[in-house]
Length: 331
Image (cartoon, rainbow, N blue to C red):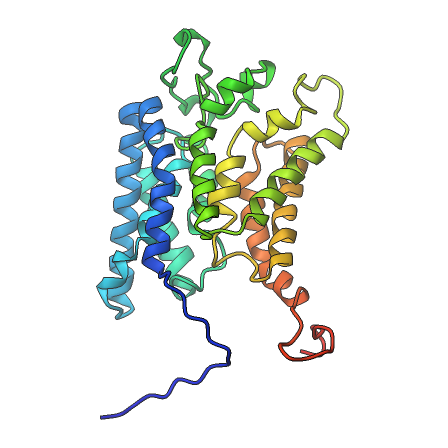
């Protein structure tokens, strides 16, 4: 019987965590926000969740079969996480084919085309969201946002817009408490209840499943720049309000659950801080001067593309060496 010797560089560090354990931990962290989204958007949200998750798993099994890989890899929870995250950044009023196409695109194109888990360049759920934005613009529009169920107050207070930063929502400054709990705040399925997302993000940080530097640098940069950058005439009253920008749109879910993806972010601590700050810079610029009110998805996908460059320039000192880190030209 032939034996294959695998040789790799030392030192080797063993850890009790596994892919499955990490992924199912992310599912647990997303559960509170998912539960709140089902309360807010009812059957509309449930439909998107079921189709997105089913499409992601079907594509996972098909790709594993085509690549001759064991089907047991489909049980590691990565396809479930992708399906959940994609559903959470889609409008609850999207047609059934939108999460179907998105789930297949995320797994088959963004993940397996590049070699499967651990080799993808971009976050699969967000790359699929960007693709759907261009493929089905009428489905990802201001007319596709149902009125969410209220936690308190009258239902007439709810806004039917993509974000408090867009459309008619831009002319109204919602109370911080409503933004924090998602009360009457329309938007993507899983991004409205910030309390649930923050609880899940804190859970992942305490489990050391994600690096706190990315969400802190991401959110902190958005807050700082939206406060400092000048605004034009006719800007809404909240345009330079850092807290309003932090609590609006998909910044919280993006910072804790998308930008912290281990595969598509830098490997060093300094690199992750740079990555988070870069994401925050892009969001602030897009929101302030772009024609799109959000910018979270684009910021993370663009910075995913820069991850290899960040890793190339932010290199740690060679273990056991007194010389500084190698420059890209020397490497």
